[in-house]
Image (cartoon, one colour):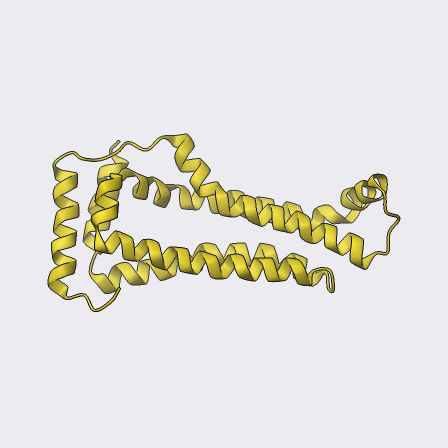
Length: 189
């Protein structure tokens, strides 16, 4: 957020609260919320599978066949993917409420709100950093299988760090009360 004054933030938060008191609230669909909250875990599981494949093709000097890969995946390769899948499910369910809260705000209000735009930018930047780290770990997993395990750790860390960063920004902007009121309104739906 570039040099905003407290008055700008207060006016923005007042506008958000007025929109919610005027009953201008979307009722987000469950499927849209689940899809949006599952994007990052899906990418992490995919990168985990690619990492397991890289470990097989570059590290094991295998016979290059579908059967050889299937045997590897059923004996050793699943160890890279299943933990990521479990953490991904936890990630999806823990981010579901935040996604539902975001989708409850009408799109035109989201586009006009300085606070929402700032939080969106901060979240995107943090997510991009973690996705780049996961991609680097995927590439390096061909050299060491430990990097394939790091994708699960990065996904788990991302869950907490994104929430920490967003929470810190909400507190810095003084928007905690507004977010709590919006969350209470959404929970009444």
